Image (cartoon, rainbow, N blue to C red; front, side, top):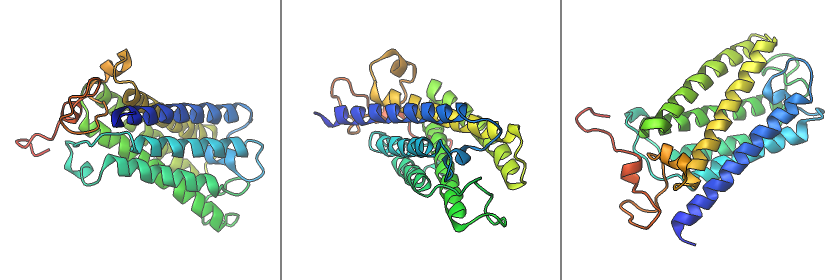
Length: 245
């Protein structure tokens, strides 16, 4: 199997993992009544805990698999170009894996409140960093891509940022109303949907979906002319030196 085909295979597996994670998370939510935040479904003692934490592990696996399939990119924004996109995906996956391994305690109390523990602090910290780096990856793709993928990434990042900020504010202020929890679920869903779409584009460069996002396609080496592969520079245009990125 060529390097390009191996990259596409890993991307396809990543798309499957991300899609399965999203399905599991919403299946868990459908079995529970009342208002709750996403992490609460994986708390110790919850009937949904094994399945939710499996979903987190699948998310971690998807991120790491994508990190091995994504081509080098050149974000137009210099602030996003200081580290590789693959490294961002890897860091996000590592944090989600840690969060799945260290679930919060019953009720998922806010850290530094009387009922919270160090376990809650570790879980929330890892989950927050994992989600933040996931958004960073989306922004890096937005900055490097053009056309449909750039639009999809930009809109996704805006929705996730707005929903996450509102949900986090509600969590930190102790507001456990329905709106805060649903906003967090919305942000999670958009992030996983974006990851599924992005991985699918990397996996299937010759299908209509890939042609719609033709500016995102894997290439084993810069300038490769292998049949079915796309040149990295055509996929992710370099920053314009006149505009300075």
